[in-house]
Length: 145
Image 1 (cartoon, one colour):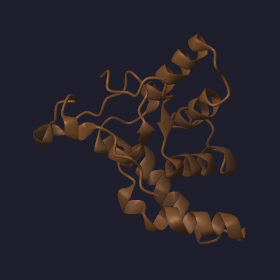
Image 2: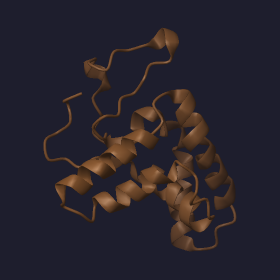
Image 3: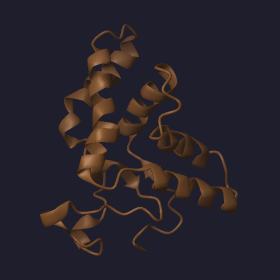
């Protein structure tokens, strides 16, 4: 690695955080391993302790999917559940937010999982399309909102 911006805490895309919050907190799947991405992300914003930050970063890296297949299984499936459930949301703000997220579901890929990836995490190629992580194309794109 070594391409992370110095001083930039690892962060997860806003859409993924919203969907994970719904899955883990609102529908009570707290035991799901993927929820560790949400917890570590929430905790990272609350501490400045170096040891804690490193531990949270390791936790985030350990539970994050590394291939498109893992992403589809771990997070893509939750997006699908969220977007199905969102049809029944009655809270206006929540409904509007879900409409935005579900409309851009195609961009919810492993590539866009992190705004700033945690140290120790790297995307693994899937067989034939194996791109070494040093490839400059792997740099996180600046997020367009």
